[in-house]
Image (cartoon, rainbow, N blue to C red):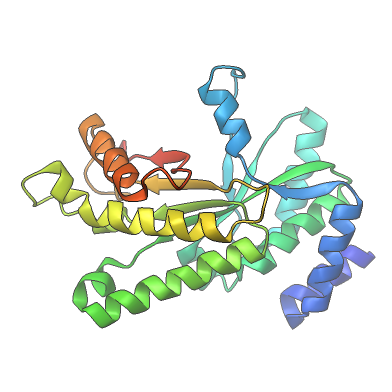
Amino acid sequence: MTEIETLVRKRVFENDLKSEDKIRFRAKRSGIFPASTSLLYKEMSAGNISGFTVPAINIRTLTYDIARLIFRLIKEMKVGPVIFELARSEIGYTNQPISEYAVSVLGAAITEKYRGPVFLQLDHAQVNAKKYFSSEQERKAELKALEHLVAEAISAEVYNIDIDASTLVQLEKPTLEQQQEHNCTVTSHFVKFIREKQPKGIVTTIGGEIGEVGKENSTPEELEAFVKGVKERLGLDYTPINKVSVQIG
């Protein structure tokens, strides 16, 4: 067993945080660094680069081993970039804290002698609608729990975060603005939260969502209402969201 494999094993099975620090140090020394996709997406949206998509892979088990395979294929096939992501729900049922997930991926990059940016993402940082709408106390507790998770992700150098408040969309409301009201309010709250916590020199890629997976398909009008609502709540003091996920069936 190599030194990196030993460190990853100690972090995963013994919750050894010193091993995590050693992996991060080795990664930086090897030219491996967690990065945001914000500049990449900016160049893509401007039409300066094209001809490829960016896959996002949720590794739920054997994270270190599967990440090793992905890095090996990136090098062999000369492809990239790839996003390594984990959703809030997956963190729970796979028992993988986001910091553990991040260093497992970094450890795999070291082992496979990869060099360059590693795109780590907190996927579907989803708001529990039942808790959010049950009472003011439950709402505050749910938002506080999500704040804690987002702060933990940023501390773990996860610089791509998807806020999923699409669960709060109320399609029974008469206007699009009313339907998207809670989604816009919560999303803008977390944009401010992330922008204030992100390290200097890093523009975290923040995603929003308008269509809950498995429910009604999104429309252009819903997208426009959501983006407008988030921008109005943010004002000019904060860099807005970088991307929006939509439900297309």
